[in-house]
Length: 68
Image (cartoon, rainbow, N blue to C red; front, top):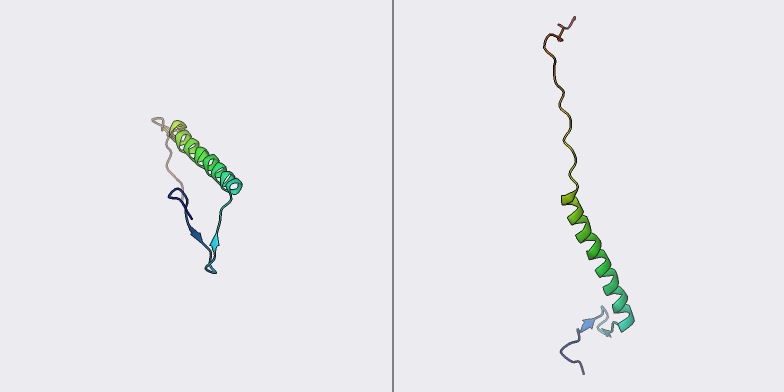
């Protein structure tokens, strides 16, 4: 008999499969680690601002006509 706090999972062959406590704990730990990394990546993406590329300026009187 299942309580309301458990989830029913069915396999492909119609038999019920069970997730054991230890396996579920490691899966949850991996998920928590991954989501923490993704949150940190998003947070750092907004903090790291790259300086804009320098603009090339022209000095007056330095241009020469091109010879073809």
